Image (tube, rainbow, N blue to C red; front, side, top):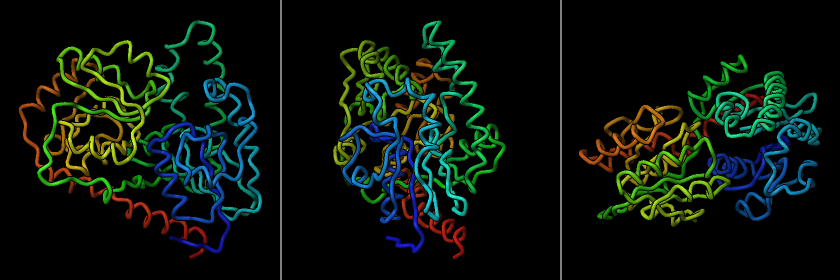
Amino acid sequence: MVRPTFKIAIVHDWLVRPGGAERVLANLLNLFPKADLFVLFHIPGAVSLEIESKIKRTSFIQRLPGLRDHYPEYLPLFPKAVESLPLNGYDLIISSSYCVAKGAKAGRWAKHICYCHTPMRYVWHQKDYYQRKLDPIPRIIFEISASWLRSWDRKTSARPDRILANSRSVAFRIEKYYGRTADVVYPPVDTVFFCPVQKKRRSDFFLTTGALVPYKNYEIAIAACNNTGHKLLLAGDGPERERLERRAGPNIKFLGWQAPEKLRELYRTCRALIAPGEEDFGIAMVEAQACGCPVIAYGKGGAKEIVLPDRTGVIFNEPSSESLEQAIEKFEKMHFNPIDIRVSALRFKAESFRQQLLSIVYRMMGG
């Protein structure tokens, strides 16, 4: 636990469900226990009390009607909201950003470190994916808003003094869209808690876990298991759940969000974790491997840095159910050593994240 003499504010986009970014945030709050947490808005009870109790201030978005179900519709207001957060008087701003947090306005003499989970995916690398799901009139409105948001996002990328990326894939996006070089600091994974159990027998189901949102591409995992008859458990929740449930056969079960202890048990007993979308990093893949569980992953984004092909899992190269089915067929003919899988996961242990971040903070703040 670190108790710096300088005053720190941590800015996070929003808190509506647990996820990888929120695990990073929890580590930041543990690392800097006296820091104040600012978020655009939060849904009470959506994340742990450990995080909620640290919230010092939200933005005007918190008071808008229908926030719980309609917050994505307020996206054009998010830049103004993050710029309105009162951050004067802080010596260091740490933004945990996957949307607009990196655009927070620090005080004149303050330093700003941005931990970037990804540039705003809705208006950059996955814009077309989100846009094609809209009806014609909302699509036109979205395109107008996206153009303005890209301009704002690019301009405000100069605000952080230093940008850290959670993977080499995200560092590439930062250079492509912002023209800035980012240092890669992998997210913290609790490889002490997520660990294998000797002689634990694996069951007959595949697992996938995370927020049920469009870019996770869970429909191809559902289609592949529908076609092959394999059992699939989905641990997570989100706006895509109802649509995905309509596509699922009787061999597929939706579990909702699971407590860490239950999730660990699922990692320990599933045949493999399926990661069908392009992940910015993919903390769940590391958690699974820390439990000795192999991973079947789409070979873009963080999976390229986490999964060692044919050693800790299987990679498929097309975002389609057919490609995933071929990967599952290949997986079933292979044998994986759980010890090798766990050793690979230890590259991403939480202590490495803490040491790297502390070193960067103290160098920036003068030692």
